[in-house]
Length: 121
Image (cartoon, rainbow, N blue to C red):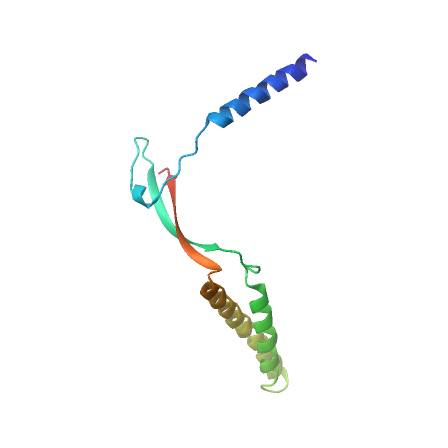
């Protein structure tokens, strides 16, 4: 029973300490700010997903690869046809991913936000 009380007491103390800790947030106005310990605030532009159902653009990549492979298969003959099919699938996948990304960006699914954090040198 004493072990349980010790554990419960430690848990309560850790929760109390956790509740009093405040996370520091930094914004663009803090960029370049330096601290006594040598750390500083760095802000970066990051692309963030907003309500996209396919953030990795798998659908666009897959559709482009299938279409590119079909088109590539119509070109050449013999072993050249195999190479054209593979090349078409790779190129089509890249194009499909790019097209889907452009559409998501146009709809506002991907936006650029500035995020700031404290870094230690």
